[in-house]
Image (cartoon, rainbow, N blue to C red; front, side, top):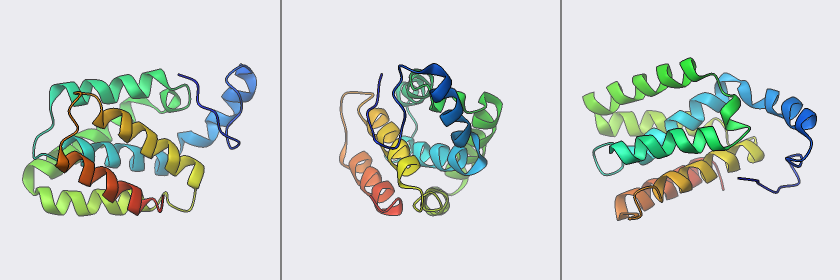
Length: 143
């Protein structure tokens, strides 16, 4: 899926895209992305299989997001899964604080929000809890 933005090079130039993707491999981007996905996935108190599959599809389909290390993504997701299982309210607050750390970088923040929107639409029924979670993520990202 091609994205168009003045902050991102055209997908037509793979060398430019590869260089640009290096910027997205940092821990901050990875942590914010997974935290936001967890907030969305657990918005209705449970993470459905289709939401988790859609999260993986979103990451695989986007050339920039696909450049994130898979093992680190899995480890970060496991941390959030444990936190949401133990104390959902505290886990949500902590995840939104992680998301907010990305707010000073609007092009990265927009990518995270776009990924969340695609995940919300994964099961074809965006519930009120998921929409509220999406609004909380957008607010944390200052978008």
